[in-house]
Length: 217
Image 1 (cartoon, one colour):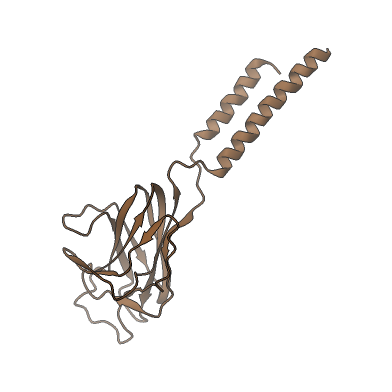
Image 2 (spheres, helix red, strand yellow; image 1 turned 90 degrees about the horizontal axis):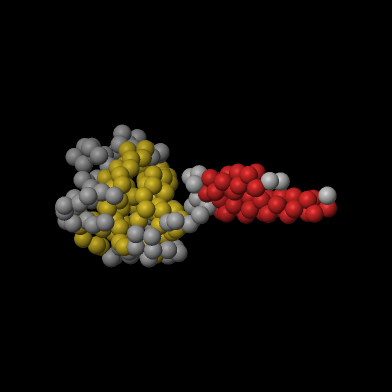
């Protein structure tokens, strides 16, 4: 095998490194909960949860556990990921989800790289406050069980309530239920590393057998 062919193979392997690869998500921090307790959101932007990351992470999604009573005409929940709950606020990411009846887990698309620090997830049911709720209850955000997964940071114990200008932390309850999913920023995908290894092994193997064939000729 000549040098030109080996060079082409090396370039092909290098090219694979620059192809965007989907990294496998892991739970960064989590406040799990399945109900039945929930925080009613019959208000304007009045509920929030917060968490702290200890490093820089590529956050893909945040799962939230919501409650929508049977017969409710308001099934859309708006969320804002922020670095502060003090006005003025510039959202890092916003997402809306449509929840089914009862207790459901909904995924918010985030797709942001977050550095080490504290973040706030603020929820709202647009147009809900001031309407006539159903007799089955009001829309809400499920309260977690208080046992947190702090793999990549910490969960703030308590519920941030009030808003939208001033929030205060109510420590009488555990955090609202949510899970932050993602991966360490800048970490190569396992498949990329595997492809690189196989490609390099192939290049050196071809070079070895090519040289051996020349010596035996």
